[in-house]
Amino acid sequence: MLLLVAADVLVGSTGAVWPFGGAADNEIVRRILFDFRLPKAAVALLAGAALSAGGLLMQTLFRNPLAGPYVLGVSSGASLGVAFFLLGFPILGAFGVARDIGVAAAAWLGAAAILLLVMAVSSRIRDIMAVLILGMMFGSAATAFVDLLQYFSSDSALKSFVIWSMGSLGGLSHGQLLILTVCVVGGLVMAALSVKPLNLLLLGEGYARSMGVSVKRVRLLLFLATALLAGSVTAFCGPIGFVGIAVPHVARMLFRRADHRILLPASVLIGANLMLFCDMVSQLPGTELILPVNTITALLGIPVVVMVVVNSKRGRVM
Image (cartoon, rainbow, N blue to C red; front, top):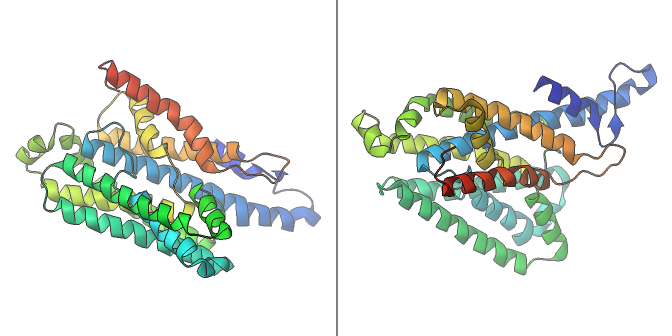
């Protein structure tokens, strides 16, 4: 991870920089490193760790290998919030810093609205698969409203929304980075506190109840942790796909363990490394062109998901 951080910081779309160059270039190099590349590397670490941990929590809770951090409709809710901000009121999305803050706030509000619906349903329904289906339905309803807003939006507003939906690790201020760090660390702490119940949930909710676990309380805690992790990343970086689904399976394949005391830190570290690598690949040295990060994560994550599906059809458990 340290090697990837160094490589990601020193090499970028503007070429390689070295912080110990001549005095005339030091100020430019310092600005490139501390205002752009270091914050972007930090965002990559946080986003990869958050999405991977959220994916692991949801796969264990729903006992579904294809569940991810966005399975509760968090991403769709965030997209709906941003769509209202950029498409419903495009004049609000036209002003620099106010636009960035507004997009993040709108995404958080949208994600929180879907989460509250899912939590309200979860407190009344015992079957976790019913909660999964309803979460997907809430997400689909949010997506339908997004499509409606896109249909009636102007070209410029639609372009802004599409660019946001492609995902980006750059452009965060130091204040936004601090907020993202606090949210992700809080979500990871909540996930770490759930390790023992997660291990019991591997054998089913009935077994967990027989061992004294309050399944409803653990379910709400996992929902909150995942929403904090995935919702924060979506708010500041846009929806980033496949990382949360693929990385937990990579951790299982590497360590061949089901113990979350191993899988959780392994997923966090692998996810952080993967996002650093995706950030490096998305930058084309010598040009100012930066590819959408969603493109890179999809190309790397899809083969893992295909492998999971094929192995499950063959009766093998990863």
